[in-house]
View 1 (cartoon, chains in turn brown, orange, green, blue):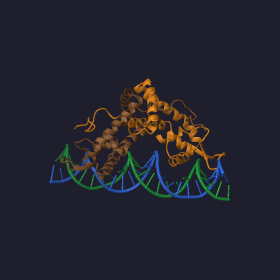
View 2 (tube, rainbow over the protein chains, first blue to last red):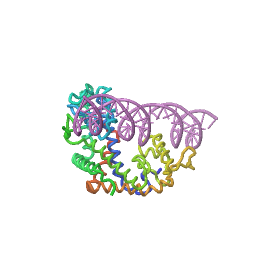
View 3 (cartoon, rainbow over the protein chains, first blue to last red):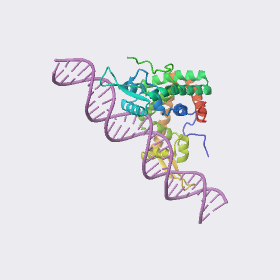
View 4 (cartoon, each protein chain N blue to C red):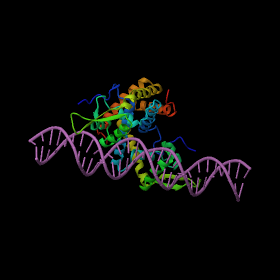
Amino acid sequence: MPRARKSDGPPGPPPILSLLTEAARVYGQVLVDHMAANGVDHSFAQSRLMGSVPGEGIRLTDLADRLGVTKQSCGQMVDDLVADGYLVRRPDPADGRAKLIFFGPEGDRSLPQAWAALHAVEDELARVIGRDALEAMRGWLAAAIAAGASGDGAG
Amino acid sequence: MPRARKSDGPPGPPPILSLLTEAARVYGQVLVDHMAANGVDHSFAQSRLMGSVPGEGIRLTDLADRLGVTKQSCGQMVDDLVADGYLVRRPDPADGRAKLIFFGPEGDRSLPQAWAALHAVEDELARVIGRDALEAMRGWLAAAIAAGASGDGAG
DNA sequence: CGTTATCGTCAGGGTGCCTTACTAGAAAGT
DNA sequence: ACTTTCTAGTAAGGCACCCTGACGATAACG
């Protein structure tokens, strides 16, 4: 059973895009597993959201902006996290329209676990490819994202 | 308005996981845009699927295995691509249960465009971070995926 | 033939995002 | 104060991509 080749055209090296996607998926799952092992049952998207909430609170629109999603999507996820006690919504004293999003009791409890899990993922990655490689990748990826997001799509 | 800091805990460097995820999303979109500009209207997942179909045909189960998804998910996507003429299903002469998946007329037409788009993405990435960096990342990511997928989750 | 494993499908569910349309409050012009 | 316009958030519905469970059909093995 032929299992090595990938396609008929250019089978050569694995496309960087596939690797990027797969790596994000695999290590996202590693993060989720780490956190679940410490009693925090968050999806990757939820972890990302929690990691973008500052201690002094944030508005939904700003949070959505940080995450690069619409405020509606963000609002839905915040709803879920509020329902589980990870976040709370309080009216913004400075703006009657706005509500500020803070950590709830569960959020305070889970925060250290989340950061620990994040570090664990980085440590594991560093163990596999080396610390230098990890830091190099960090810089390259940041540059690539900045360039790619600038709209320089087609030639 | 504080806009630079990301969170209350360790704000330090951007987590590699966020960068990985964002890079995959950004350049996945670049690929989709490139292909759309050449008349091929595929999502990233569809492109990945098309890229995993060998010219001599493949069974659904094997295809799902290559993509790392269930045969049900894979079958749904194949259905969509069949409906648009990119793929065709033919009974496997060697196995009455199985059907082999081949490229359809649209698939043959789109294949060169897809490979070109894939190369364009890599070229663009190489232009941003350098060809050496790209090749280094390819190796590291492959190693990271292999290690992470081996189930070495918690410490 | 009967049992078990495999191939593909049907039915249903869930997450993570989206667009469109809307209300409530704020800001600015007159 | 009144109106327009902008902004914060919500409501409702949809789409893509993935999952589990259950099933009929064929194959492989005894």
